Length: 88
Ligand SMILES: [Zn+2]
View 1 (cartoon, rainbow, N blue to C red):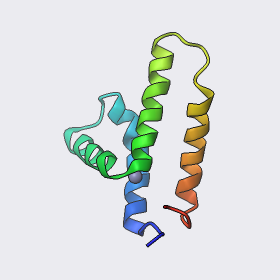
View 2: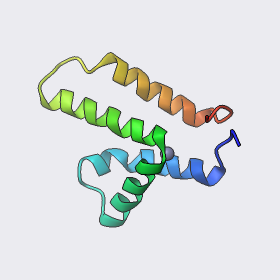
View 3: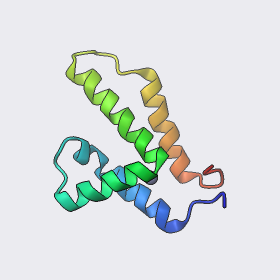
View 4: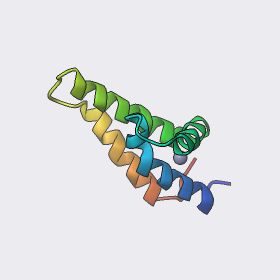
């Protein structure tokens, strides 16, 4: 199986939509539990979460240029959601 199932993809989209709120500690308990569970099983969303955290930390520590690589990873992630034929 190389293709993501539709429900899996829907879960990824839902996760990415609440991910920032979750990382800011603003998601409700149920959402937070769902996101945490998904992040453990989904490498792509786990990577996205780490990327957001790296950006947040860079912003908090006053660094003015956010890691270029992190931004590129985010773009690659959103592209990978749109392009499901190589979900490896
Ligand atoms: Zn995912």
